[in-house]
Image (cartoon, rainbow over all chains, first blue to last red; front, side):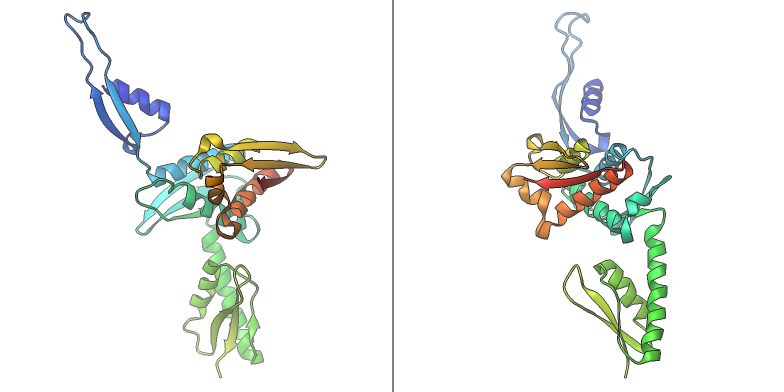
Length: 196
Length: 75
């Protein structure tokens, strides 16, 4: 029986907790070990575990890209963080993180396919998201200062919802400016305005 | 790069065995034509082409590493 399951897992390239096993026929040693011996029959059904599927899909993508990437997954309550590290991973970040965002969007779709319970994934490469957040917060404070000094609106370049949120949050409790967004995605941008 | 596009599409669609990628070699660029069943079209294109854009961005990154210019068309 165990052997039949092992065999099936190997063929499906899945791990124990990614399948449901149903025993169709028990193995039988037969009489005296030679009369009527029977192999066990099991039915193995895939049960999608998004975090496992995500790791496997990423590994496959990186092998097609000839990239050596270490994948670390951590559970953060309402989402799963996937940290990627390795040499020359700049191409996974792309311009202003657009490759990283595409990869993250793709994994959120593909890893959750046929999953009973969807999981949200956030992917980072070598701490890029953290660094970008710090850069954006600093930029926000600098531009708030400019808006205040010149007494007029400062218009930022278009940003995605996540980056806009970082700016709004950074200036949320600012005494001298307020922020709002204008325009349609993907060209929506933030305006920093001095309080009168 | 053909294998990458095939894999990216297969992991999204309901009929992976129907995914076909044709390669058209140009002088400077390579065009990859991705074919899926009509039921699966939405799964590789997405609202406002968001999924198609993500696939193209990933493939472009992979191609840039190999110094190639590649376009992905969905037909």
